[in-house]
Length: 223
Length: 223
DNA sequence: CGAATAGTGTCTGTAAGACAGTATCTG
DNA sequence: CAGATACTGTCTTACAGACACTATTCG
Image (tube, rainbow over all chains, first blue to last red; front, side):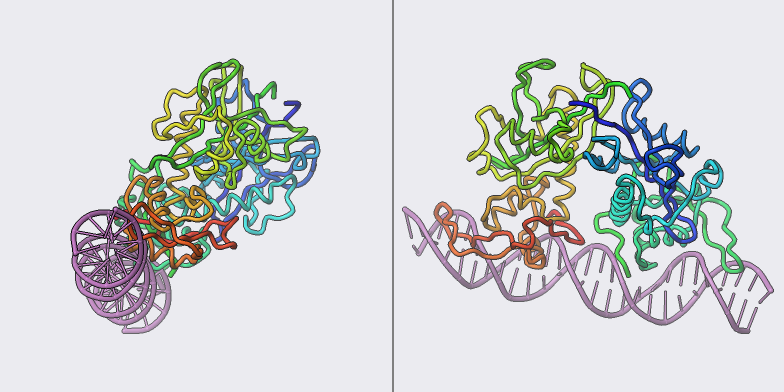
């Protein structure tokens, strides 16, 4: 029961430029001073109600972002992941619309294509990989990707976010049928004018799904 | 970063008497001396390669069982869950066939119906609840329940285990079709004589699935 | 009107559920 | 042979995917 280094790390994901991006910060002290890494920090028992609180606090303090979606991913541990000694990190992942990052993220935050994140310090590359698997898997049978959209969005936008997350294209008719059955969305007045074509209907999350995922039995299958 | 109590807890599940059972131990010291609780213990940085190692060691030392399936569940934390102070427990769940418990479990191990586990010390009731949800959910689209069967088993036995875990009955034809498609099992010589009727074919896990789950797209649906 | 994107109607194929049949054991 | 359980053949139903059609905007 000697010294265990207890920390949290957050994989903050967003979709920009048609790609899943992960938020990284340049470390300002050793170990790995100067390297880009996940936002993370020590657990503060005096301050935090639990590790979820530690993650929310760390994310807010280091990136400026208060994420509407923050979920525990997994706990990583062992003698080798931190040169300072045996350590334990409870990892979380957050999903935020890109507009929120543009609006409130501190300038130090760097976005990098998440699937190309390699060579990060500690075991952060593995944590990012695990987060991507979880988000991809969970998106295949739930409404998780709506957290990557803003307040309002169109169905083609939402489908595109699903396709980016899942890494494969989805049948349009099936996608819309499924969205309809889930009764997840409600139309919002005001259309989104595209560039120079038929504008799409705007939708928003129904209030009852603000804090809950909608689940589907059979998933969004490629097509 | 003051003192954080770091431990692991294991939810050991098995199917007996047609019910999911959880293994509990009587605590022999405070806090909660005398109460039935999950097998758990402190992380030993000098000894453990990671928390998975801590969980395997704790399970072996306290129950005598070496589980073929042990997976991280979630991490529970906060100032209130342990009267000694701010604590963090990495929870794991293990699935073992009942014959293994009969063969190697220490006499102190008590099995209790898992869905009725309430009033356990710390937040162990919540941990058990979370484990049940995870196992149920994962069983609906994977071969997880085979770990609850012994080396060899019949299809009616396996289906019954699925039904116990999922809490609902499964269409027999669909179940067998699915098992066939997954190419998960191979027949074994020697039939299992039931009580007084047609004996069922014995099967075992194909070697390539010893360490891997088989996944299905659409799940085992009730019927 | 043409181009481009949004959205829909409908056919088809696939896979799951229901049901009823056959197979094989004990006493 | 009766009873009980194991296993299978096949029809029906439900849902996902394909495709082609209509709708609406801009220039």
